[in-house]
Amino acid sequence: MQRHLLLWILLFLSLGLNAQNVKFTANAPAAVAKGDQFRLVYTLRGGDGSNINAPSSIKGFEILYGPAMSSSSSTQIINGNVTTDSSESYIYTLSASSEGTFTIPAATITVNGKSYTSNTVQVKVLPPDKNAQAQQSGNGGGGGGQASTATSTAQNINSTDAFIRAIVSKSKVSEQESFVVTFRFYTTLEVRDIGKIEFPEFDGFMVEEQPLTPTRQMVFEHYNGRNYYAVDLRRTLLFPQRSGKITIPSGKIEMVFNVKSGKTVQTFFGPQYVMTDVKKTMTTSPLTIDVSPLPDGKPADFSNGVGTFSMTPSISATDIKANDPVTIKLVISGTGNMKLIKTPTLELPKDFESYDPKITNDLKYTDNGLTGTKTIEYLFIPRYQGTFKIPPLSLSYFDIKTRSYKTISTPEYTLNVAKDPHAGSNSATSFTQSDVQVEQDIRHIKTGKPSLVSVDSFVFGSLGYWLWYIIPSLLFVIFFILYRKQIQENADIARMKTKRANKVAVKRLKLAGKYLQAHKKEQFYEEILRAAWGYLSDKLVIPVAELSRDNIEQELIRFGASQELITKFISILDTCEFARYAPVESDTAMDDLYKDAVDAIGEMENSRIKK
Image (cartoon, rainbow, N blue to C red):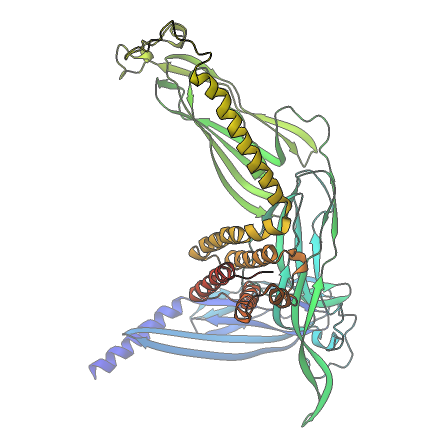
């Protein structure tokens, strides 16, 4: 009896504690189409609510029904710990009546005499799909009738039902001015699988990849009169390194869609379409970026910076003793091509001991460039007492806002260097710098046994004299023979590619191993994929562009590889292509894939295959 009473007391105490942790939230779709019906849900957790006060009218929407209430509660007792979770949902059905972006106001509710307010929700209402059919039987709201607008079949997947776009934030920029290219996938079809993805190389640009969350969701978007589900596959920040018209090549993506097969079957509810899976390859159009050169009048000490920057200098101390270290720190802040800014040169007085600057970047990706700080620390040590001047450091850059060159500088620092009290009376630091001229006033006394040469000995005609002629001549002949042999080997391109195939693959596998240890899934699979494709391209002497999933088996058979080895390579390629865009794989699966790649390349190298 006492045990049961204790459990009930713990239960009521936990309910009381949870009641204090009350949360009242609102939730609705981020985007809907005009005319769609959708649900607005207010959820209360941690208490029993009463007197809900929701907006009676909402701009841009018509309230069709509500509230419909539902509730749930659960209690768990694990090792004497009691946890409860209760929730109440107040559901309203709304219809989007106007296009635009609207804010649904907050609602209030009372829990134990205390009022709680929900968050507001922003909903974007898109225009209706131009291809939407009037008859949408069995198709609910919230999706804009998307499935019914698709016209694709197994025989023909319409290019307007699914495609990939390369979108640039700017098409005309200056040298080093950043812009963003986004590869976005649009679909009205059901996606079953993701195949091979080939993003273009960005020759002529410095590249900064924007990290995208692996769990990103598709969003509802209106494009060219139709409503699609869209998702960004890649967002890249580019900095053009030269002027002129630079072309970004096409990108490719393979998708497997579930579409109508063209056949129907009779069911209790009438004829139904038979669905089937079909693979489709989509390609982006090449993009041309017009890059203009920076204007004339570039300063002589131009730092290569393009953007908007500021500089904060500081010095660790100005009154010091000889042999004490001094640090000058520059903190460059702003937005632009931060990584490409050249380090200003610090001019130091003679006989100062200096070290290479330490550079630390704390940068974030934005659509306008890299933003954050670049910290440069100059460390040096004065060796003599005296007063010294440290000239200003300057940073010249092109201001992208004013379209003009600007220069920012540090002040001139004066160092007062006192004598080092720990230096002995014979130490060089007991003098001023002006008292001592190294290698002029002081000559070190040479010690050790002297080396004497007889005045009667002559070099001419001696053995050493002739060896000076013979040995270089022999070395020249040997070098010439080896050089000719190397030229002949280099001329055989196919042989050189085959010879370096394993070396290049091993380098990439080592990098993949580092990504594996760091649990960087996307970089790991991408590097394994590059290693496999690059190795096969070099080994088979076939450009990567001409290799594909469809012809790789025939090329390996022609090369003389075994069927088991061919199957292993194809399995590695398929696993990498799928895993880069699939949910996170386990470490064991990544370890197995790494071992398979190493074994496959090793097996092909060790076998006596002759093309």
